[in-house]
Each structure stands twice: as structure tokens, then as C-alpha cells.
Amino acid sequence: MEALKKLAGVKAAEYVTDGMVVGLGTGSTAYYFVEELGRRVNEEGLSIIGVTTSSQTTKQAESLGIPLKSVDDIDVIDITVDGSDEVDPNFNGIKGGGGALLMEKIVATPTQEYIWVVDDSKLVDQLGAFKLPVEVVQYGADRLFRHFEKKGYKPSYREQDGKRFVTDMKNYIIDLDLGKIDDPIALGKELKAMVGVVEHGLFNGMVNKVIVAGQDGVKVLEA
Image (cartoon, rainbow, N blue to C red; front, side, top):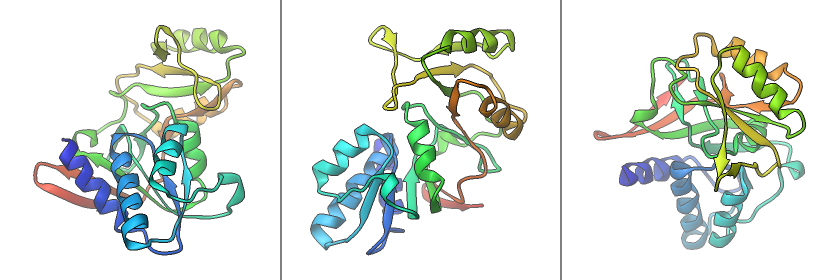
């Protein structure tokens, strides 16, 4: 599977050309995209500016010599390549398994061409088997947790080393074990309207191209 992820990441890097501002995703498949960009910068003289979606990706890009700018210092990102935890037939997806959903969505929003790279196990008929991450501020988080319990959303706090996981933006993540999501658009609006919710992991209608690695090789799906 790692070899397939690498193929998908390298394929995605083909869409990057000289002079672009590039959003650098987070996760196991996006890792190979960033690695390939680093190779092209160093071996081919590719001239790009990277905008990262996590502290993890920032470290990787810096180690490869990819020039970086803050998302605050740019107006438009030409292309962003990232992974996804689930993708449905309408190109709605769940992201945030790595805990970077807020930064990923901030970078995706000003992006002209947004691409996901996934292995074929991430393609689903309906979202929801993968737990939906919801990033919440620490103050009042338990109140939100109880609200999710009452709604039947089966919440659990994301943990790391026996403690509540804290995102790069210093928030908690509550994962919702929904099983299936009948209407991702409506759920996204419901969650976004809750005071204390910073962002959710539903990326609805944002992506226009999905690069899929499978046993038969790499294929490109377009919306």
C-alpha cells in the first residue's frame, strides 16, 4: 500500500508547475507528494512557494528545502494536494484523522485547484464509517460533548499518550462515531452553527479531482 500511496503522491506532483503557490497537505499519502516536490525543487530547480497545513508538514518541507510562506501572506493558492479519510461519489469527504482539519480547511479555501490523493479503500458509497472529527475550543468542551451524547452522535475525545489530544491551534478534537451520514451538507451546517465548534471534518463540495491508488495502478477521478 505504501508503494501505491507513493505513486499517487508522485502523480499529484505532476500538476505543479514553476511559479505556483502550493498547499502542502498532511498525512501518509500527502507525505509522498511533498517528498516529490522536494526532489523536484532540488534536482530540477522547480520554483514554488509552499503553504503548509500542519507543524508536521512544515518540518518535512523545511527539511527538503521547499520555500514556505504563511497562509496570511498570500491571497490565492494555485493548487493544494492533501489526503482524505473517506470520499463519497459526490466528492464530499471526511478529513482530520491526523488532527489537522482546521489548518487543512483554511488552506483549501483560497485554493484554485484542490486535489485529494487516496488509496482505493477510502472510496465509500456513504460517509460516516470513519469517525467524524470536530475541533472545539477547550473552554466549554465538556458541555459540547454532552450535547453530542444527547444527539446520539457517540462522541469520544481524541487522545494522545493518555491525555486529550491538542491540535496545532490548541483545540480539542471530539470524534463522532456516526456509522453513516445521510446528509453531509446539513450536518456540516448544524455543527458549524454550534458555539464552541471551531471546525468540522466534513469537506463538502470542495475538491474537484481525486487521485486514487489501487492494485490496478493510479487513476484520476474528476468532479
